Structure formats: C-alpha cells, structure tokens
Image 1 (cartoon, helix red, strand yellow):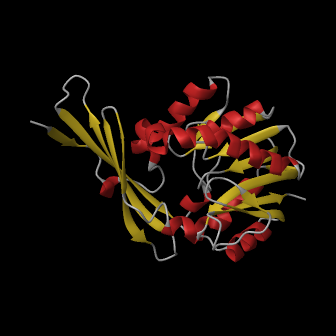
Image 2 (image 1 turned 90 degrees about the vertical axis):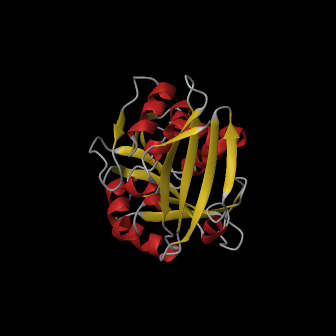
Image 3 (image 1 turned 180 degrees about the vertical axis):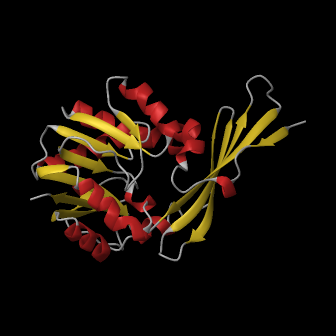
Length: 268
C-alpha cells in the first residue's frame, strides 16, 4: 500500500520564500537541458552588462537561488556576494560556491547594506516575484547599493511567459520523485499563479511518499512601469533587449515574440 504524508500545504506557503519547499527538488524540476543552458545565458547577460561599463569589481546577485548565476559572476572575476529569501536555496548555494563567499538570506526590498557595488544582477524571474506596489522600493534598494557608474541588470517576464510556461499544467519525474506543476490562472495584474506539487519517496520505506507544495505567485510589470521605477531610483536606462524562448536576444523587445525583457540601467 502506498502511503502519502502531507507536508506544508500551499495555503501555508509564504510569497516571500516559495523556494524553501521547492529547494530539494529544484535541479530536478528545471531539468538537465536548463542546467546546461543556464551558464551560457548568464555569461551572455554579463557580456551585455560589460558593454555598459560593468567589467569587474564588487557585485551582488540578488535572488541568487542555488548559486548558478553567482558562480558565473565569480568565474567572470567579480568579487561577488549573493542574497536570496529562501534559506533552503541558500544552503544549496553554499555547497556550490563554498564558504568564502558572502551569502545572506534577504528579500527585496530589504537587502542588507554594504559597500558600493559595480554590478547588481537580479535574473531568472526575481523582479516578477516583487509585488507591483513594492517595485519602486525594490529597484530603489538596489540602486542604493550601486557605486557611481554602477550597473543594474535584471529581467522581467512578459505576458508570453505567463500564457506559456506558467499557463500549463505538466509533470516531471526523477528516481523517487514525481513533480506536478499546476497552473492556477492569471492574476489581476496580468501575472500568474501556480503550485508545484512534489511527491517524494522515502528511502527507508519505499511505500511511503511525502507530498509538499510550493506556491509561486509572479506579477507582470509593464515596461512603462519599470521605466518609471528606474527613473524614480535615479537610474539611467541604457539598454532594453527582448529574449526569445531558448535564450536568443534581440535589440528591440516585442512582447508578441519575446518571453522576457532584459534591462540594463546605470547610476550616473
């Protein structure tokens, strides 16, 4: 007989750290193909930042997750630190980057103070987890950590993402693990909600499975709203590119074609 033990239900999940529950299953969920593509994607973003002056120095990866983008910063020669709202994901980041890298559990807009930075990155949906009323504070907090001439680089999902990936219900499996991404529909702001159900087999008792749920709530930030927030934070918008599904970028974003907008802003 198969026994299913319920873990934290979705109703108890907080919007601040949905990845705490997801952390043990994150790499299995994103899949081998994404794990292979992700470093190249981040390297391409860092090359874009370098074209606008971010070629080295201190950097902070906001929403660093398991440390994949933080690793790219370190390999590019930055003196890089990371922060993320999920303690579970940060434990995985420590395993990846080692104990010598400064890692802090914090969420936008409440990032810790520190020395002025030459580059801040917030990639892979970080901005979309920010509530629309908190967007100005979130961007202002990052601007407040930049040195003069410092660069902020982040992405924002377009409605094409919310109607595609977020809008589907699908399953993924790994040995001893069954994952169900359940789309819950569009939010009032054009974003989307979804639950990730994880059914995990007990190593000691193979007939026993544990069910956990992480709720993911993302928000749509229209381009004009992002531009206003950047200007309010005293940042100069120097580039906006459109990213296609698969990672290719175009110099002019088109929400009928691109799943993300990539922003590069600089503090004068």
